[in-house]
Image (cartoon, rainbow, N blue to C red):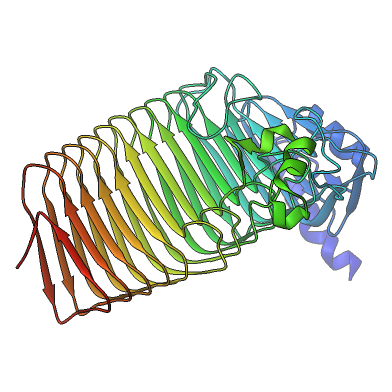
Length: 461
């Protein structure tokens, strides 16, 4: 059997030599020293010996241009029990591919065992070259990340490691866009070494955009958000999230999770203090600042036990939001299951279909843009709220939908409010308010309101 396996290899080598081509020796890496050396030497293709268990006590670093492709081959890279830093850091590459690999931190973190921002390590950190242009692609297949103190997966296009949270947009970045593809990714138990440690985090602070594709993946038990995308600058955020589960994310600052009072939380970590409330986090959070758009779809997604919102999508500036949410299942959330907000001149369009959720759905536009909403074949176990507080219009088409509580719609300026409700059940009240100088209108057919209809400056057609 050995001779039969060697013959094709010898033949291939003979052909290569006959053609004057030097045959590259395959790197078969099975220990920490070999892997660290291969990365430090700038090897662009690395394969680990199948099923290797590699224990490290310092960060593995690739620092160079071009591509990096790692085939983990079912191996695990784990931190020594005394090592709390980042496991794998890639700096300056314009293409990164990692597959079939587990990255495991030492674990054991909580608000009582926290680390500083600088010492809390990530699982995989990818840092863009400040001079990068074009598209930087990151493709992660069958990657598992667990038990690190900070972000599980972090892609950073920002000149500072402290890029700011939410839509603050602090820091500068390159002109490049980021395309992040996640398939079969599993992130569990990360982000408990500090506040705001997410399962997956992307910070983009330059002219480029963020493009996310996440399929067949799970994001569980992150101290911060399951996924957070922060984009500030002229670029857009585009996303396609399909067949993904988010479970029990956002608990790091939670009173209930930690068994502490609010004062006890703030005493242990002052960064948990969000204007007097615990700064808990979401399942999937997007913050888009400046003039870019937010466009994307969420399809066949399950959200369970988030300590704040489920889908929390915020945009501000001249751009707007255009979002499809289909086949969404949710229960046991603390906050809204869906919150989409736009602050600026942009408009909002949200299409929701085939959802079964327990928590509130809140959609709002806060300036000169319009808001357009359609909800079809939905069960909402709380309120459905649609609000426009600027000069734009508010339009909604709601059909074959049941809310356990209220449907509320409000237009608070010069625009017009128009609702069409068909074959639906409102579990409590229907409240539509047009505060501007135009009379609103509602068409209500084959539907029932269990309690009251409160129409202010709104005609029933």
